[in-house]
Length: 213
Image (cartoon, rainbow, N blue to C red):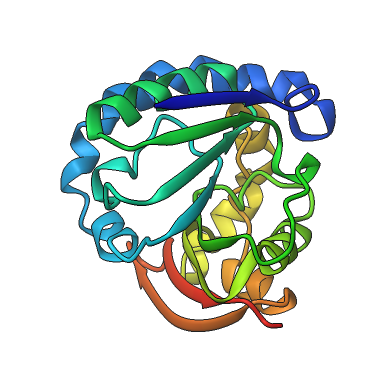
């Protein structure tokens, strides 16, 4: 069964232009979803998902191919079109899912709710990513896990310099910051990093973390 809840007006702080950017990209991401079934990095980290699971910025459901079928899943996104694509993906991959249309910062789950919290490529979009990570820390159970697959600054200085120079343009066009040091952001939060792997010249970050209670 797939359930759907709408909380308030979707969008990061009500910025509906940003929602529209992601609505326009929803069909493109849905077309890419089949190819992601072979994505070794998604498989590497998201095979560990278990229990009651929250995924923020679920998008078109790129990770559903790697999730166990017995999880209790809630997916959040501020884009109605992305939610529509994620609903279809849940049916395809046999994930029993509830979906919430909202920006993450507007949510208020009770403390210690989730066994697993998943973010794949969401830290690039928040005004205050440290605050969002601290929400994860509060919502995650003491023995739970936070699994992050994020993109950020290259480990190659010349490439990182280009990212910083083009950041404002990238955010204007696709709603995504390119200049974020993901490890530094996490270290500013309350999360405890358990394992880190990087790929694609450091651009891709795989991070296994746990809450600090």
